[in-house]
Length: 229
Image 1 (tube, helix red, strand yellow):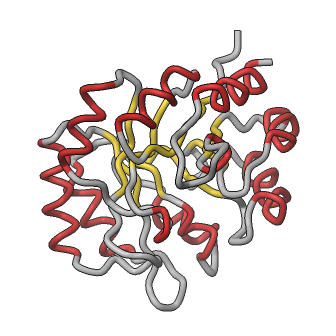
Image 2 (cartoon, rainbow, N blue to C red):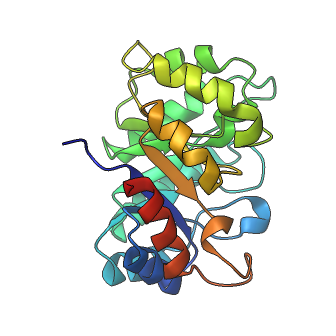
């Protein structure tokens, strides 16, 4: 019996979280401000969401649009405050000005998480060398997932990269789960499942009325059905 694929849904608030869980999501990515591609939510939102649902919640650690870390001390403080508010899983990813992983910062922030599981997000799709990034991060505690479309432009552009990386699962730097997101559509799913990819991440696809509207349990349920078919 194969394990079912993980479906992660972007949530902005309690209403989103409850609808995503009702639709069959396995996990939430909790953020604020999608106009900036998702920033760290408030501790109050984290606490409220943790109280409202019992699925896993990964909380974004990101202070501003773009992939530079910004104020590292503030990030480390935030990590501690979010953990106190109930956060136990996280999402982060920082690049330097050259498009290489900002290893010192990622190590520092990951260290503040003290072994909590975390995802390296789509910063990997902007990196100059994905393979080098993965090898540099290979042994960081807690890193268990890469959120990626395979390319900066989205899954349509990135499919060949996703399929190639899926074939390398288990190699050094490739032990982590591929969580595919960024322009992901239902028609992509069968081919990705056939390649052994078992993580799927949706944002706008769960919101029929766009980012101004809430997550729809029905939309999430449709993804769940396709993933489980």
